[in-house]
Image (cartoon, rainbow, N blue to C red; front, top):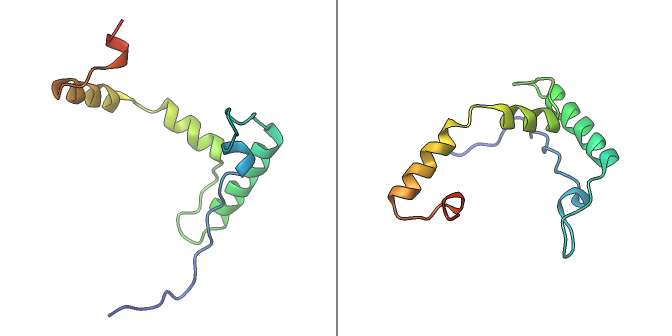
Length: 91
């Protein structure tokens, strides 16, 4: 049986268009727009009923980039075994 959720969850804020869209070039970084987005994400995560946490977009990115990247080496080995040429090996 298909039901209807008791409550409608809040929609997660999206990155502002000016931070992700550029015409014939990458968009220029705008610190004030990123700070506003960090605040919006922080408000979103702290107001959630379940899984609430103090988090910002930049802290999520920093944690991801600082995490163990061992899986990337494994993926590279799998691709190489399947015949893909890895750009760093073409030198």
